[in-house]
Image (cartoon, rainbow, N blue to C red; front, top):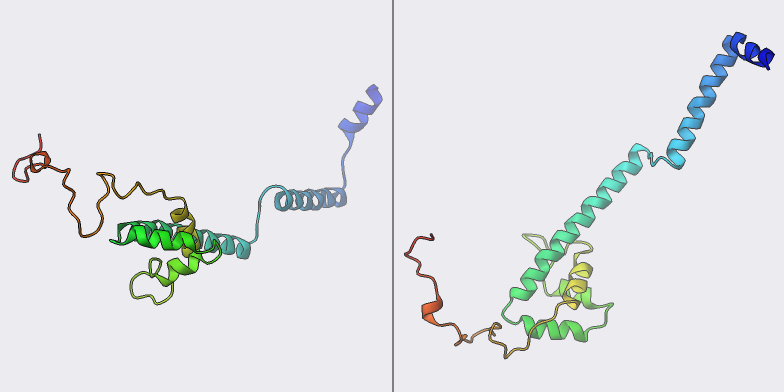
Length: 156
């Protein structure tokens, strides 16, 4: 056994062996990195970043869409009409209503209509006769003027 250890310890590889060992190690590192390490090329990274930005933009637009939809005076009517639509055409209803079109843009934000319609489909409105819900054009009689904070007083 001592002879094997001496052979390994005394081994001096040639320049050719060193060269091909380095090449083999580099190739193995690249294969492992791209296959299992999550490495990607520059173009793929740009595509992934653009896709992520588009998804974030659509998610933000969908959140704004839900808020705009629910703050409209006829939200209950619109929500009922949205629920009558098939699940495949709800995004078209939201896009046609203009809730996912912002600023001077004429086109809705891609993907926002579908996300907004999905979020609106999960909304549960309280019954119209509950005290907390005020229909457009009505006054909530349950709120007393004494319960309202005085605007001239400083908060303590």
